[in-house]
Length: 172
Image (tube, rainbow, N blue to C red):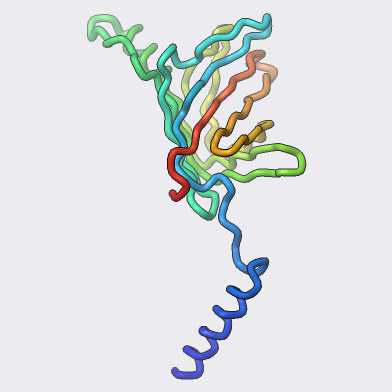
């Protein structure tokens, strides 16, 4: 037993003395708050995708596991007699979780999405399906504690979505 404790202490001191051998914490680690969520339509029009007061939270741990939620901050109250209003309010939510990583050479952010909820139509009237089990890459920029990325247009969705986040806490 004493030998394994000594061996563990030696290994720990070796890894501590050689930081390249220790797992690096995600550069995105922390708690982020949404500062903007919008879309640029194919004709160049800028649209607040989740209304004018969108809210959201992105939390990333040291290993790059994340959870992300974006929702309409000031959704109008849904009238129980009008199912269309209830459905529209439910569309104004986007949430997913999984792993997030950065390619700092190519300036690409990758979401490896375990599960997602994002059932809404964009301004062009195209449906955005759930992203369960997908891997999605986006161009990004980071300036200090500000992160922004774009969701490029796809064949079914000609709009470019843009999310802007501010890190409010460095630890997750």
